[in-house]
Image 1: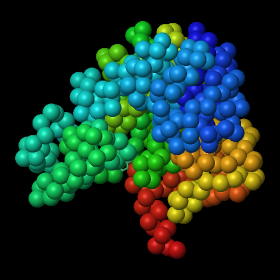
Image 2 (image 1 turned 45 degrees about the vertical axis):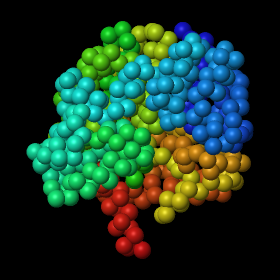
Image 3 (image 1 turned 180 degrees about the vertical axis):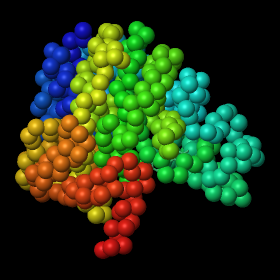
Image 4 (image 1 turned 90 degrees about the horizontal axis):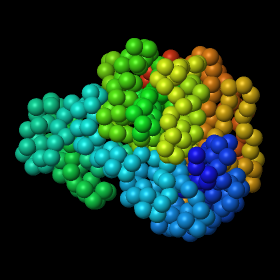
Length: 450
Ligand code: MV4
């Protein structure tokens, strides 16, 4: 087993990784920017090293700096958390070159999955259902336009290197295709330095359902069931839950096994997530994430698996502790992301936290890095942490969450707690199974009613 870990991240995920690493007996090594001198992850770890100025581009994103600290501190591995360096294949390679284990998949897998066309082609070959469309090499406008016609409108043009909706254009009419293609290519080139696109059938009102997988590189690959992450705004998830409402055990086993089999076929290792659009009983693969995700706790609560522990174990070359038959679903879990932002305008709200009281009690988990007196810096994303509620049933998890949100005190800054309370009072959210458009539609409706 590994003896020490450098955690190349900040905030709640750095604290989350530190907890499991300590329990496994690893020496924990934090890195921090100038803005994070007083951060909780710095206090929680056995030692901490400064890596540069507040902007992430000058600190948390500087791979060479992180590796230099890892070498000096004698870190045996680097856990990248999510964001920052977590899906950077060059960084994973640089770790290997420096003799430090990267806690994540092989660089080739990160690279392959970072390109949507390659990911789709690999998954299609492995028997995972993908969104119908064209994801080949050819990029001539007339050819792609012909493909769009064959696929049938509406279609969606997506940047091959894209993410988070950038370089994405919906096209409703054949006459509008070429202008939309130009726009998508321009945006893709500017954002990713890669103008290539793919064309897909536009799925009208799907849910976002993702499957958590794990592979150990010894031929064992399992799925840890699904999460429903449909409640999102501008590609930022707001509430996630597991299992997904209405998914039957049969459907779950079928899609889960396809994902696990795909992992075996591509020689995947580590934690991963297959993202799907789900509509009318059908799953359509859109992309794969090769990191631990923000919403991993809902999966942990329903399966009892510590996802970070398995990540570290697999990185150390060990076998997974679990076989597929060991993975069960017990109860239901729901997660609210608590952000420092105005609950109406969504403007970020950095500043000093003057009072803090976290919720608690049976079935409540809080993954956060904030404390009374903490100064929320303006440099990073606005997430302060997550409240996760667990119950025997979905209804009980939601009840516990409502009470938890009402108990929670965060003063001095604005938070989105009122938004969560509003959503958990919405009958369609309570019923479950809303589409990816629900939150933005509900917000538009709210704006009209004010
Ligand atoms: C789609 C889609 C509809 N049809 N693909 C958005 C960003 C990227 N991750 C994939 N996205 C979508 N791809 C087809 N063929 C709708 C979305 C989409 C979306 C997907 C998941 C979660 C939230 C979303 C919000 C808007 C659009």
